[in-house]
Image 1 (tube, rainbow, N blue to C red):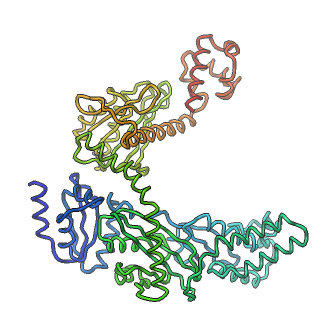
Image 2: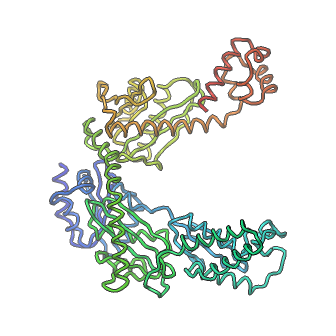
Image 3: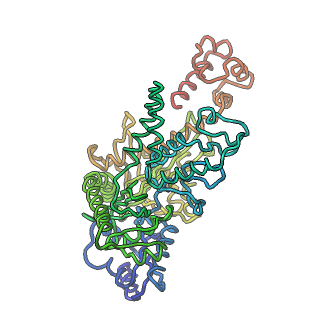
Length: 594
């Protein structure tokens, strides 16, 4: 049955019930997961009317779909988020969890410590946890500031004797002195006030210390305290908002234009905007669905505040139920002003960055599409590129890098240590291609749409023969280099042709970037492998050096550099002249590549 007829029949069977849908490409891979109040209406919308941008690209790749019916919209949201985590679909890529934000923790111990932490999953019950701080530098600077002012415990375990911090006045010597519990509690309370936004006590302490040191003519020390005061006044005392209730809340705003959604989040702690986060991405769903999904997943690695304010387009009831916190859509007053301010900032952010986004898209997605058209491919998303490295046939390795839609996907990079150390580029290529794609077949891994080998016609033919032997239908092309080791042309088709690429085009830029990326990745791995080899094993690779001569060289020189620096006449005392020349040449090449 043809693709269109099959989809048409399945669309007729869709129910008007809530649930999730999973879009698949022709290889059966899930490329997008979405949710809907009414599955029939939402899924049908992908196949009606004209689409643009990322949505059009998604629709062009849909070959089949599945759906799961649930009882309520909250169940569909939970299921959608779990399915995205499970399958990591390419068109949900920008909604992957961001790197977890740092928090500041004041430990709930008899003698507390202050530290920056990231993994809050194991700290959900922490009593004194403050953040998040999207700016990790600000979090660390704040901890350093408070540790300078308050003599808290600095060590993880008691050292049983005073340490350096005690002698410089930044610790009270808890390991060897009895300290008044009231003093510790006073410090704890002042630190908590500071982290909640009340900087007055700390500022007052710093002013006293600065004035005291100045009176003693300790001007350098006084300047240190002045710098700390400036840090508080400039960095930490951000814009104060009109709400004086000291409720921790996050404010979400958005702006949508030209297919891109810009989201701005303000973190309000202690009636002050302490941090903000900005995110811009192109979308395939409605603004309402994208916003709701983004906010729901936003708190996967974050502590939730007391309250979240969202624009009117967001489903606040659904989010309140899912997040189990107070989510509000303000309609008037100061809270609405805050949401509008977040939306204004989202608009400014998108307008400022749009040209950069366009240029990046031209260098990645559009250049990738141009390559697809040149090679007459139906689809081109995932490209796997290979390069080999060795030293006179030793330390033989290969590297594979992956580009998805024109951008590197570093989590998918792979290293290969070749089993036989011989100077055989074709043998190396045969082994690495077989190992990679036998594994792809065996473990049912995602297959690339294109394989690029960093080499000439010989390497291409070897790679193609291996792919054919595995009964895989994956095109293989090569990148030719000129005498200056720069990308010069694309080798493609059958029989192989040299495809000239305009050196000023975005496609040439993309191919050159791929070639540079795989070369650097492979060479770095090669260096790691080489660095593990001893001088003894290196000498084993030089013709004419047996066990006796090797022992004499090791006894006299001990390191590679000393042999490299030694004059030939000196080496001739241990080795025949021709072996000395071979050894010098080998080691000079070795150190050059290292």
